Amino acid sequence: MTLRCLFVDFNSYFASVEQFDREELRDRPVGVVPVMAATTCCIAASREAKVHGVKTGTPVHEALRLCPDIRIVQARPARYVELHHRLIAAIQDCIPIDGKPLSIDEVACRLIGRERQRENAVAIAHKIKQTLIDRGLSPAIRCSIGIAPNTFLAKTASDLDKVDGLTVIELDDLPRALHGLALHDLCGVGPSMLQRLNDAGIDSVEQLAAAPRERLKAIWGGIEGERFWAQLRGIEPPSRQRSAVGSVGHSHVLDPQMRTAEGMRSVLFKLLAKAAMRLRQEQCQARGLSLHVRFVGREQRYSRDLSFAALDDTPTLLQLMAGALEPLLRAAASGRWPVKRHPPLSVAVSLIDLQLNAGETASLFSERQRSRELTRVLDQINQRYGNNRLYFGAMQDALAQGAAPMRIPFQHIPDEASEADLGAAALVADPSMDELWLQRERQFKAMAENAHRQTRERTSSATRPAAATPPAPTPPGHQPSGVGGWVRKRRKDEGHGPGTTGSLF
Image (cartoon, rainbow, N blue to C red):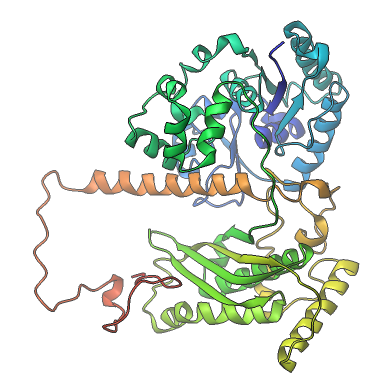
């Protein structure tokens, strides 16, 4: 009776929902994208598309090359959330969910008593699959189920047979059942951790499973290594307790019509206003702001990190960000940033170094007090009559174009009051899931950026001469010019300390 967790993973969830709603898409390769643009990436691919090599993070142009008959459809977050609740209800009619869903497409269920017997656990899994069929959700929406001694191994088991599979891993099967996996197949081993493991001489799951606890703790640089060691052996480590929210922020891949200096600025203002509202809902104040802009065709990004006294009012935060953006906007106006050649691709803003509110105190400065009062009035009106019923003028372009809408949810069921724009489709939000914000979306963005980088590297290597002539040495006193011949002049004491970035061009 070593089985303690049953893990349900809905296969190709977003693409499966599209096939569920549109019969003409069933049994056809489908790619789901956040915006209908050739420069974006797939955030989901149907089983039929995956056969051709299309996966999460594959650029649209690459997906069309791999699978010419793939159907590209735009994501519909509200519909995915709606069906999420129906799927959760179907599972709960078979077995209680352990706490809350891990994400919009993953659910862990705790096995107790006689449920831990293999035949009973397998019977529950079959009942879940049959319930989906009986309610008309399957076969369009199917799930793979893993049963194991802990959540980590149950999730791993669910990945072993992704097309409507059912896999059981018992304690006696360890570690042999994992030896056929690659290191990157394990949850928690991303590119950075994979490199650290390789540098430590661990190149296979067999070596990882045999490594002592102290070695994994040293590789991970802390207690996470001990947690991983325990999970590989079927132990369920204590859940992490979050004492407070560490940061709040939003990011957005710009639609083609918003890839201008003015469009970028408007979207950033909208994202920051939304983050500031969430900050106040968390009863926190921020002591820092982090701003990032990525560009088409350039690896380097524009970044600014600001520190300031704790605050939470929107006008002051917008004013601070406007100042941080000013050098970039001046570069665009003077031509030093060739916007048409390297338009902005994505933007991100985060409020960091948070602290809990110590209590309401009046500001010594009349302007700050006025900003706080204005913010309080805006919150009251928008919460009563709809988000962005009143807004700052700098957000006008973003709102008019519908840019930066409520994000596609992976590990968070959105809060309609603070995330959905006025007039957007209504959702039944689950406030108990607020802490799971954007974790999987960040994973998607990392994969998308990596896919863009690999595409550029392939293009560069294909056009590079076989025997390249090494560049001539730079004459003393000469500083190479950037794109368009522009290079930022530097003061002798200027460095690359916190809050600054080097020349973009």
